[in-house]
Image (cartoon, rainbow, N blue to C red; front, side):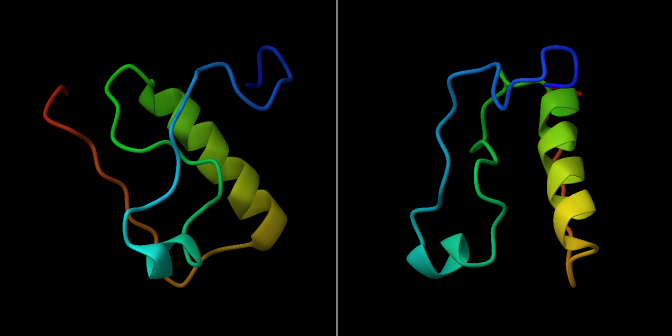
Length: 66
């Protein structure tokens, strides 16, 4: 994202199967997908942080591939 200036570099699926979570989740943040690098996920989080400030709760899930 930072390197290309584009909003997305990967074909990603977003959203939650639990509709109420979509109201409190960052739009455009990818679902669990090990093909999407964590650096890319951090950039999406950073954009939201810079736009909206700190959230009341931040959760990061680093999968078992680390």
